[in-house]
Image (cartoon, rainbow, N blue to C red; front, side):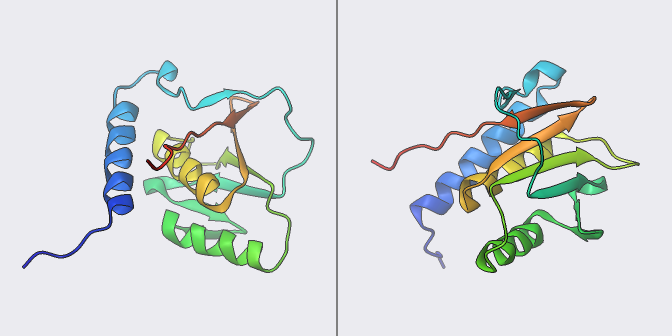
Length: 133
């Protein structure tokens, strides 16, 4: 039995797999989606901490990426500020490529600017989307 899969879902899976393969190529220079931001805000609307196993800490609650999406979407629906999100390392875990990819996807879907703090330096996570033909 064949299940119908939408084209956009298939594209999302392919893009995710490609991003995972690129992230696995290693090195600090592998993160081309993270660039020095010229206009780094003084404060951020939301601060998220990177946790073990690709999880996130938001308001002292651990979330996987899908649950974090729901929490941030709820915040947006409540009319709370959601323009800028900062991803930082936690006490026990540094920011990994998987964290950056997950936040990049969320920033595209929920339309906010994402930033990452590494080694005391804040950089913007830039994302690009493919236009539908």
